[in-house]
Image (cartoon, rainbow, N blue to C red; front, side):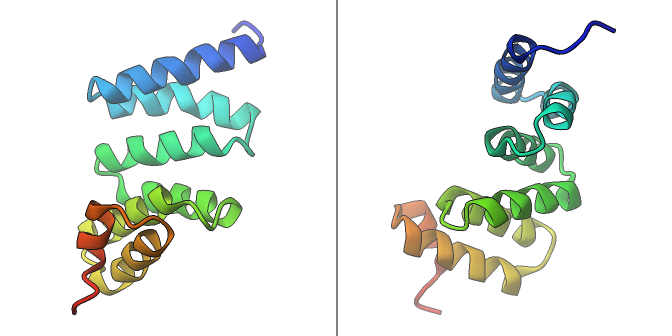
Length: 120
């Protein structure tokens, strides 16, 4: 196998974005795995892989990736919202509500506010 280069990693990352847009989350994960192995601190790659896991209904790996992103970027509203969706989909509504509310507090977008259900 050829040696990975920064250019290879960028190409794989961009291709993974395209695969995710084309609704091929498993293909995206396959491309992102070596990128993350080479650059474990790359938050953008981890966030993209978390989204791919979620779309592939691999909820536990998605949850773990979103948590890693939030450890590094606790003010990432999208990561809180996506983790909330992941937890909600896994039947953990009480845990999800906390992340929905954090997302809405960080970024009061209508979809985040609706998910936060502040009136409950």
